[in-house]
Image (cartoon, rainbow, N blue to C red):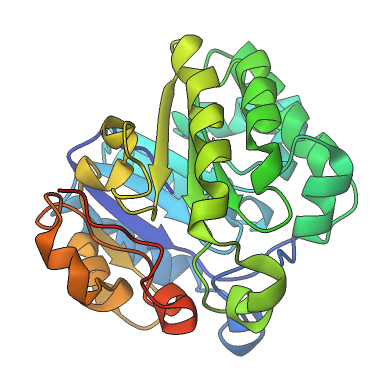
Length: 302
């Protein structure tokens, strides 16, 4: 759920502490079982990352609540990363001084997550009262400072009907790019599967209306983890076809090629997919989805 404007990128997870408790969090209990990495550990990852990439995404967990946040940014800047992106829930950026300090320290791309068009919906999904107001203020602050802002919104049972309204809000806020990502049913999202995961065919018209709003406003818009057969007529807006080759420094492992990982382990194709004209480029849905619902709703495109 990161920038798709760079060619060589590394995602570095700084740990799993977070000031939200999202119902769809893919990290599950890692905040309790693993916690956070030390400054020294992360600096080592940054040095290794710079050998293979010129762009970096700080992710987690929530990096902005770390005491060494600015120190890590300054170190990444000293390594001359071209792009330094912050994947965030956005709440700390509600404070303009915090935004200014982060930019000064080296951050030059920001990816806050907004999951609803109203406070009641967003705050319900994040289980954090006041998070909507903070994230919206964060986007306003960052845009007032002329920063590149790309948002990510996770598609759930609760919000899919409101994606057009969310798109209208994002356009109004002036974001440069937004993405609708189908919920990945692992971690907390798997625990609450029946409450969180919608059916693909049900979300289709709302996703497309949401994209139309951004297209009309000349924004860059994308979807993630929605197969080609569901996105008929909107194939150019599928993020997987242009996501850069990305290395991910995760909890206790390094995923050298996240594209291969998604295709070989994360996602799944059905028996009828082989006759679809998009078979070679489509990754299929996250495997947990057809393991629960099957493949009947995925009609091969001839």
